[in-house]
Length: 500
Ligand SMILES: *Cc1c(COP(=O)(O)O)cnc(C)c1O
Image 1 (tube, rainbow, N blue to C red):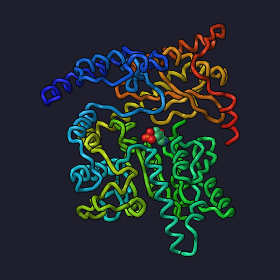
Image 2: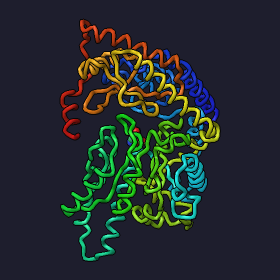
Image 3: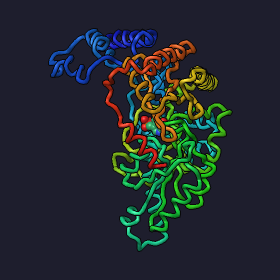
Image 4: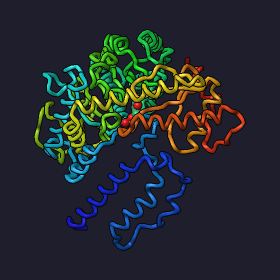
């Protein structure tokens, strides 16, 4: 393909994407395909002869789109949002146009320096303490990781290395392997699955401590866990606090956890993957009170900030902790020596290669402006509150816990079985998409304002579907048999209760 054909192909693809997004409400949010549909539709072997780009786009609309779950549909209320906006999309095109790999300053100076600049901008917009910022006097700074999962694992690996070094320095006769086997990490039983996975990947035992009735990990609980484990000869090493849990968007009190971690010299990582974006609005910053105690902080710009996956913004107070953990030298990597202010980002992450991800963050920050992002957040939260009112006005439902950010959790008064059946029946019709969680041992449905396109009319539409399905489900005589693989409700609830 030459540049002329690229111009045509690229412009046609952009038109197709714009049409897709303009018409997204016309599509069911969940696709009507069976497992294996695409395997059957596409040839078994790659084409031997070159094909036309027109045929690729044709198959894209005929075979790919029908098998897509429409994450940017205003009817998508599952999980948390994944970011999208035109500025971000174009930022991605520019990044791919350059196609650079920025593992060191020399490998593409702009790639490194734009990341420093945008993370300084963003860190200031979120109101992070100065120590986290590259533009402060100290060794702090930001880095774009691929995902919150990676940020949590990077934090864990760095905490481990730092603890081992410290203990060996104080007592060189200790055995490194034995120290590592005694290290232990902590988070709450409300943590995202990726936090637990970081423990598995990083070979560190991870205790999921019992959150309080509001889903928050309390200082007392952490303190007691440290004491119990120290008494067993274990070494507390890493704590992951959650600002905006995935289940109910609860906020751990950093002002309680932080001082305990600092006193005991334990690394505190903050997972604010979804809700962290809200700190761009000053009225929500009280929810991160105590953030100055943290060693690392992560927010997914690719969730609520209208930036496409993957763009997880992570800040650390001390960049040397990362370099001490991840610096591996090779002669072919031996280029211009820079200091901590101009990082060789390969030492700040797990892979060697890295894309120019700062470009999409830069285009979004510039074209939307801080005010644009703030009004997006405020608008989404007010839509969630609007939805909560609709649910509260229907006396068959309970909204619980209090709505938090763009998330509203609710259930039928009729009990867990009926609530679960309601969700299954709604999902089966594919018009709106929500997922479940548990709260105080009960089954709840999570409704999240996800799409940036969502309006009040869209919320009305979703509510109408929920209400109509509740009419059917609650009238008891119409019980559609679910095709959705059922989670074992009894098991979910009893395991939830066990952990309480
Ligand atoms: C979404 C989410 C994650 C995982 O984010 P990835 O970027 O997909 O790894 C982690 N923690 C919380 C609280 C989340 O909401």
